[in-house]
Image (cartoon, helix red, strand yellow):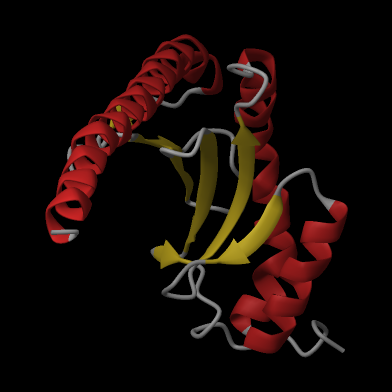
Length: 183
């Protein structure tokens, strides 16, 4: 006798609860799409001034990629990857390309020295430094969007990217094997 009311209660709970979850999810998707569109407009406006053509990734629809080639003295290029997350954040990851590839901590002649240097750079620089899952070195910055779309702040980060080239020059001894790094 009690099983029917309990079953009916859970069925009603599911009917009421499921639309609320899906409704919130679509609103989050809407915010992510809106942020992606605002970012696309900003990149099309600021990209040419820093000589970078950004394109939307075909594999990741909330990711933009650009390559900075001009005005660099040490790096061959700086690969810029910008992602819009579902959790109201924008992530910058800038990968320096040096001597035909990414800088990789595991392939550096002095990997420990390079990691120490990255930690020091993170303490001293505007952008933080790290490695990804494959040990490739990147500089990064993360924005939260709680106060709206940070148009001016994003522009400042985009214009600061070319400055990363000087730090790649500082990394050269660790990458190529000088004993002066990490002591």
